[in-house]
Every structure is written in C-alpha cells, then in structure tokens.
Amino acid sequence: MLNKKKVSPYLYIIPAFIVIGLIIVYPIMYTFYISFTNMNIYHWFDFEITGLSNYSKALFVFDLGFIKALLITIIWTIVNMVLQLVIAYLIANLLNNKLLKRGKNIYKMLLMVPWAIPGYVSILLWKNGIFNVQFGLLNQWLNTLGFQSVQWLNQPVVAFTSMTVLNLWLALPFMIMIMDGALQSIDRSYYEVAQIEGASKFEQSRYITIPLIKSVIGPAVVITAFTTFKQFDIVYLLTLQPASRTGAGIHTIITYAYENAFITSNYGYSSAISIIIFIMLVSFTLLTSNDFRRKKHE
Amino acid sequence: MSKKNKEILIKILIHGFFILFAFITLIPILYAVSVSFNGSNSIVSSDFSFIPKNLTFNNYLKVFKEEPLLTWASNTLILAIVTLLVSLSVGIPAAYAFSRKRFKGSKSLQKSLILLNAFPSILSMFAIWYLMSGPIPLVNTHIGLILIYSGTMGIFTIINLKGYFDTIPVALEEAARIDGANEFQIVLKILLPLSRPAIIVTGMMIVIFVWNEYIFSSTFMTGEENYTLAGGLYGLQAGEMSGSWPVFAAASIIISIPVLIIFLKVQKYMTSGLTVGGVKE
Image (cartoon, rainbow over all chains, first blue to last red; front, top):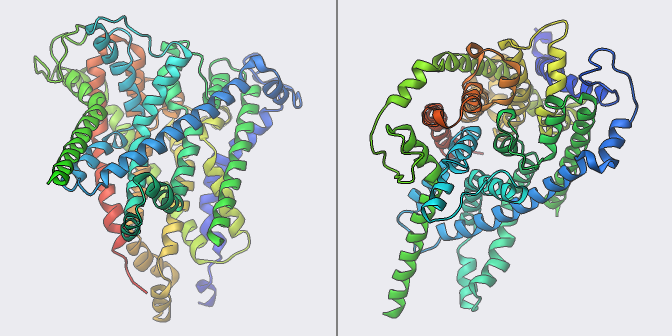
C-alpha cells in the first residue's frame, strides 16, 4: 500500500521519452553522424568518415550557396518582421479606434480567415490563383489594363517580394490578434492624462502604447521571428517543387538543406547544414529565454 | 458642430478602409471559391468576375469521382486519431510529472524539450527516412508516419499541458489525497476534468497538424491509395497544370472546411475555457 502511493516520477515520463528519443533525438544524432561522412547517392552504404570537410565547405565555399541562403534568410526575417509589426500595429490601433464601435468584430473575424485555412492550401491557392503566369489573377488584371504579364515567381527580387506579400497575408492575422489583445490591456486613463497634457497621437504611441505592449507581445514576436526564420513552405511550394521549379534562385536555409538531401542527394553535406542550423536555433532559443527571464526579474 | 462632422468623416474613412482591406484580404479565397463553382472556361479569358457565370458543381463531383479523396480522408483520419491517442497518452503523464513532481533532471529535461521543439523535423527528415528504410522497414507505412507525428506532437503536448497544469491550484488534489484518493484517481477525476479546455485545444492542434502535414506524407508514402489529404492535394497540383485548376480549387475548399470549423471551435474554447477556472484562490 505504501509502495503504491509513491510511484516513481520517472515512470510517468518514460513512455514519452521513449517515443521522443527514438523518433526525434536518435535521427538528430544520426544526422550529426552523417554530417561527418561523404554519404551521397554514390556512397549509399560504403560512405566514409571525412571529418569536418562538410562543415568547412558549407561555411567557407561561398559558391555552394549556404552563406547566400543564410543571408537571404536573415534579410527575409528582418523584412517580414518589420513589416508585420508595423502593419499589425497600425491596423490594431485602427481596430481600437473609439469611433469604430460597430463593425469591429466583423472586421476582426474577416481578417482572421487566412489564419484558419491550412497553410499549404493557401500557398498553393496563391501559386495557382494569384501568381500563375497564364491565368493568375494578377496577370489577368495587368492584361486587362493593357500591361504585359509579369513572371511573379521567376526573378529573385520579384519572387522575394511575392513571397513577402504572401507571408504577410498568412502571418498578419495572428500578429493583429496579439496586438489587439495587448492594446486592450492598456488602461485608458493613461491616454486621458496624456491628452490633458497635450501629447500628440504620435507621442502617445511612442511613450505610452509601445512601451506598455512590449512585454505583452514579446513572446509572440519571438515565436513569430523563429517561424519566419524557419520558413520552408512558401519558398518550397512556390518556387522549388520538382515539377514546377521557377528558377528564382531563392533559398532559405531550410529549403537549402532539404534540396541538398532530397534533390541533389548530398546527404553528408545536407546533414552538416542541418546541424549548423540546429546550433543556431538552440543558441537563439537560449538567448531569448534568458532575455525574458532577466526582464521578468527587473 | 464642425468637430462632429470631422468625427463622422473619420468614421466613414475607417469603415471604408476596413471594408476595402477585408475584401483585398479575402480575394484569394473568394477567387478560389468562384473558380471552383465555375462551369465555363472563363478563368483563362480576361472577363472574369467573382460571381461564377455558369454555376456548376461539376468540379466538386470530379474531386470525388476522379480522385480518391475519400480514401485520402480516411487515411488522414486514421493517422490523426492514432497520433492524437499516442501523443496524449504519453504526453499527459509526462506533463503531470513535470508540473507536480520534483525529481532529479526535471528542469534539464524540460529545457531539452524546448530546444528539441525549436528543431524543425524536416532537417532530420533524411536521417528518419534512412533509418526507417533499414532493418525495420517503416517507409510507406502508416505506423512510420504516426511515429514521426507522435514524436513532434508529443513534445508539443508536454510543453502545452505542463504550462496549463501549472495554472491549476494543487489545493483540490491535496484535499482529494486527504480523502484517500490515489494518484490515478486524482489525475483522472480532478486534474483532467479541470484541464478540459487545454486538452481539447491541444487535441485539436494535433489533428490540424496531421491534417496539414504534406512534406513527410508525400515523401514517405508512395501510391495514391496511401496518401493523406495533404499529400494527395499536393500531388494533385504538382501533376497537371491549368486544366485541373478548378478541380484543385474545389478540392482545396473541401479540405479546408473541416480545419476552418475546428479552428472556430478552438477559438471559442480558448476564450471561454481559459477564464472559467475550477477553483479561484
């Protein structure tokens, strides 16, 4: 009876850790192992340990494209995060405008719709419905207005812009909702005082709203930054599908790792890329979580 | 008086902005819906409108007749349900232990879960594929996919539910313990009912995850009869081009509707469930 009362805590976590260990940790360790070999389509079974050569290739041979993909990913993350935060902030402020009493909930609901549709479905609908060169909506409109069709997904800059627009479409609903919630948490009396003191709208934003919502939206912003940095679906589905590659030449680090494993079959090299990305993600995670803990104690 | 006029003008401007903005946001969806109901071939001509000119359900019928959509749907459901059961049954006890018990390694294990959660499983996809085509062949089996999904969702379940369990006061459990309830009864009769909203949200997220996952299911499964909905839809658009676009639009809409419904349901739970607590201290 006494024995039964005290079940070892480890018994509770063992099943979960068997599953996670086998299916998550073991493949990561195996990836780590492959990253030190020359495993590829020609060396499927008889691959050899080649030390750090895959890592040095990734980091020092610029032509192979990893550094370029990393730079694109960083630019992608910055551009998207800045646009998302600015647009979501403006829209959430408009939604909370005193004059907009009726209709707020309807607008909010309509703006949330893109969030509720499976991401890959949305991306494929955009690819075929909006960006398609022959019958996409954008080119239909351009042609009606008498302009030439544009290849939305073929040149790097145009494709990057198209992807950014699509990413905003997918990600803004979440950010607007977070901002909206944060704005509602602010005590109205701050603004009343500010108005009496004669502060302009810009000053109110600068000195009241933004400092106050910072801590509320912080975690959501960090999570979104991670998601943006790990972008795969948009880039892959729009431009890299084997049956319909557009040659835009845009890679995020994740599509780059995927391509080297499943298209060009450089398994060793691709695994090294995966491990480099993993190390980056782990350091970011540790950095941001420490940051939050420090902020809480302040 | 002029201040009032100004307010009315601003009001009209804001409403105008939101009506326009909402419309622009919804264009891709409205367009897909319109195309899916369109009978004529007007998608290639320029006289396009958002209201289909020849209303037809043919594209929807084609999805069911020419594509094995029902097979894909049942594959997806099987995967989703088994993944849900596995993730919850390994995740709930672990989340409970992390939330309620002190033991050596608890903190570092939780930390490593958060780090593993940051790792996109697509990066180890090749290793998984290589290992699963080894001595125990799991490539092209449902069990293989279920294991992959359960691993990812197991971590998610533990992190999510542990956070929620932490918000439930232990007072009730202590009271039950004094009344002679054993641990199993406490979890089953007190903790789980109180965590209903969180468990439902977590469960829905798991189902949506499996429903939406296309890259593993299209890489690991071969043969149309083995596809999930996501894998099937992915194959549908990759295979043919302009000819099947209306059919593809119809299939997309069919596949999106359940997720849309689940999403709206979860949202309701998220707001009501998190405020209606069990005990308030």
